[in-house]
Length: 261
Image (cartoon, rainbow, N blue to C red):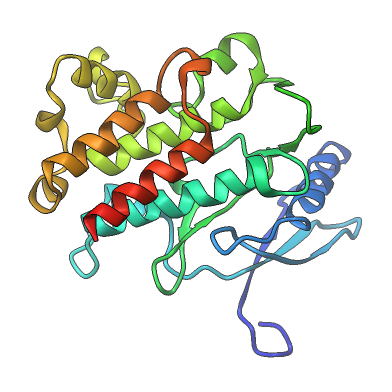
């Protein structure tokens, strides 16, 4: 708790070494320049020799991963909530890509990095692997970072991360919201082990309605489902150039949300 009574969350490094200092400073530089209602705010930091700390706003209701994959009878994840979370996240990522003072690639978009505040509004978190790029720069060439199941296959093969790599990761999140399935399942058959692959195959074979979450089937209209599913399919295109931009994704989701209302 701060002196003014504000509750905060403190992230502390377990081990301090010189190798951790550079990514820590990178995180501070990026976070200090971000200001969006659907992003976790950074209040301050500590760069003492013995420990490294980041002080964030406290986001009380956990991660969207928990609500997607664990049945919560007290607060179930309705279709309206799923659609709103997706729309809020796209707004935040579009801001990163286009509206910030210079473009930023998040590089680790996943449902466990989407927190929910006291009103269950989405807050994109964890910018530890994020990188800023020059205005005219089209990609980053880096050692592969990210989370298995959300990684853009093109990035994995070429080590070149583009804004469309973030779009791919968000496509996996959309598939999660639609199906309730985890991005990777070790218990599933080879065909369905990767959610992205399983989802694309189901779309190609017109089996989408066989893999949807029961609540989505119950609460959403067929047109709404197909609109979101088609968008997810485009985000997951193996050819990055054929994926929509985050601006286009945000506009489409907002239009779907308005049509539902």
